[in-house]
Amino acid sequence: MKAMIFAAGRGERMRPLTDTCPKPLLKVRGRPLIVWHILNLVRAGITEIVINHAHLGHMIEEALGNGAQFGAHITYSAEGTALETAGGIAKARHLLGDAPFLAIAGDIYCPHFDFKQTIDVLEDNDVWGNPHPADARDVAWLYLVKNPAHNAAGDFALNSFLIANEGEPRHTFSGIGVYRPSMFDAIESGQPAKLATLLREYAARGQVGGELYRGDWTDVGTVERLEALNAPFTGGIK
Image 1 (cartoon, rainbow, N blue to C red):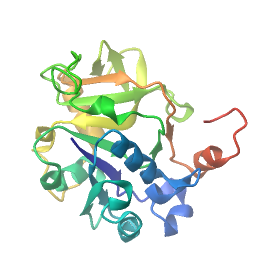
Image 2 (cartoon, rainbow, N blue to C red; image 1 turned 180 degrees about the vertical axis):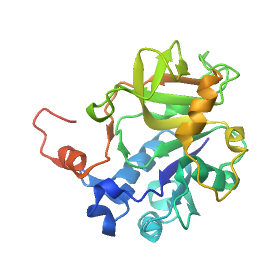
Image 3 (cartoon, rainbow, N blue to C red; image 1 turned 90 degrees about the vertical axis):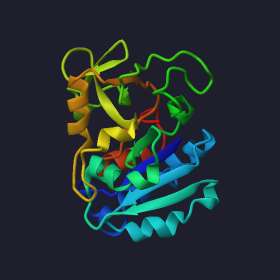
């Protein structure tokens, strides 16, 4: 399986930090956000990684290189102007291949997420040969999390591994998902497109599966959240 890490966003809410540093290179506990992902991917045996970038993208390439220092092989999809998430995937299709791939938001912190669970998640059996609840019609498998304070209403409903746009209980999309490449056939390379819009279209058809991840997870979308993660541990955010 290949993985794509989204790293093209401008990070407006993180300014002024992101005026001189791309958001995925901001450090949490001494390590860039994107490096947490890379190390966890390699630990799971996922070493082929695609990273898209736009704002200050050269700094990402300079910091990560070809990935050899992490035991990975990194290729880059440069975007002159950020193309949003689905648009970024469409532009990088030639790097991702024809099999289902993993995609991860570059600005989340989930240090204990085990990416082994994503391998072959859209197949009838997982990598260990165990039956899996994914349906053959599923074009995507999303990992949801408990709603944080800044997204109290959630994004999707989850019921028996089926994701829907309406209903209860509702949870927040973690920014981690596995996708079939065919999902992006209708998006022209180089055109901006939002992944959320596409997911809602397929969810309305009953073609998106998912599950709830209960481990540590933070959307590092503001300076305040970054500071909270880097504050000395006092029993709060881990």
